[in-house]
Length: 192
Image (cartoon, rainbow, N blue to C red; front, top):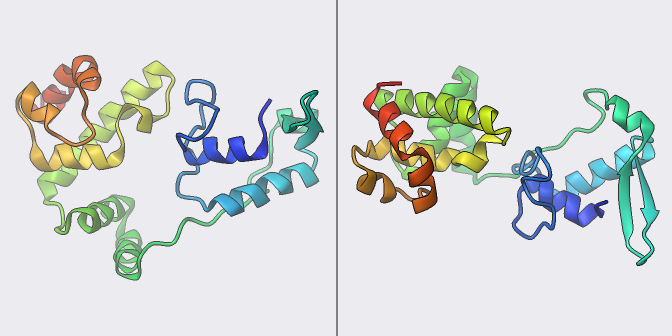
């Protein structure tokens, strides 16, 4: 059982959610959506009969999936817009998206780090994403739980060669270093 605010927080990946990533495989899946639009989307799913609301014994208004919802929701039932970006970043991303999705990722990284990535950095970033996808699939987790794209870009830019250098990258903690350090260093070295 979950209330609408908790569901919204889970879908945007908020730490304020009482629904944890291990409980919901779509935790953070709508991180770039506007929370108010997610709420409207939930309301639309209730109106369409895919979700139903009910009141718990404690008086909380909760949601549940209806039998129709269990069968699946048709594509296009709910459309969500992404959060607005500053105009300069938005223009850069739009220009890159016209070229390719890889270029869009490069443009976002460039906006984040004030300089565009080199071709080598972009190539390493894609190899790191491929590695992360494999790890996430094996662990049945969303990829961002392993590492965020921003961390992968930082690794691609710094190209650490030792565990200590890897630990110096923002977004890499001791637990991640212990769990993934050797594999990451192999990807960086081009061995995987």
